Length: 359
Image: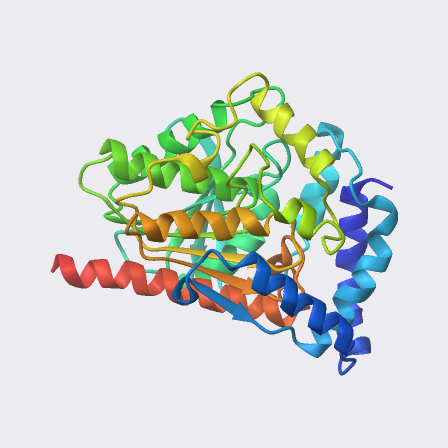
């Protein structure tokens, strides 16, 4: 079984499992271990910049069954042949009835516009989709981004940036920059950048470039919100070991192959590849949401630690017991809806705060 098939199976399971498992609480020993691991993983970051969300009992029962279902597929290798399956999984994210979609192009990069029924003029979100730099598409991610755009009250563009291995690094970063510049030139005056997983990497790289290179005139980057970003392609995070058993999907060896497919012979420590090592001073307020049961947890914790040290208003929300990509299970996991609500509130506040100051 491939990892994409496993995730698809998990998605189907989650539809009905929450109701069936509601009320089943996690074991006391499991809660104790999670708490101990969390304290260890966040020891380097300030209390103000790390917010921990407890695991809902109903969610705990569902994710426990998830782990059993994905055991045989954990760490499985995947290639471009999995693209259709991955998109199919992402398209199953619960859609919003108050959102419409239309094809578009920004900076020569095709993609999809996500238009909520209610939006404010002069504001826009640029979302960089996940998929480990080789999977995912604007079409596949439109429902997830619809959930974000509707909550934020702003239109969003999802670019179909060039993917590895056909178009390796730095093609995706170049496309992200081209989209941002075109978005600013199109009349957007207040822009927020969002992204998930590998798209979170691209979003943070782009934010650093925008603030450090004076990329666009007339537009202001007001905030960044990313979910489970891959910030360190050197794979030096401690949670590749401390969360090796807890993560139901990924292993370090598997991630190393995916990263190699993207980078090739490029230096993984250069800022365009790993935003953890980039110029963070001057970045706008930044929010990160991540599951506690992810090998990528340390990528979020260390990024926020460095950002805060550089004077950035940055915060990471850690959701106990949650696996990678949990916001995609909105309507099935309580933590998914709560995290998306918080992301929407953050984006709304950032976009409106900048508008008020510009008057």
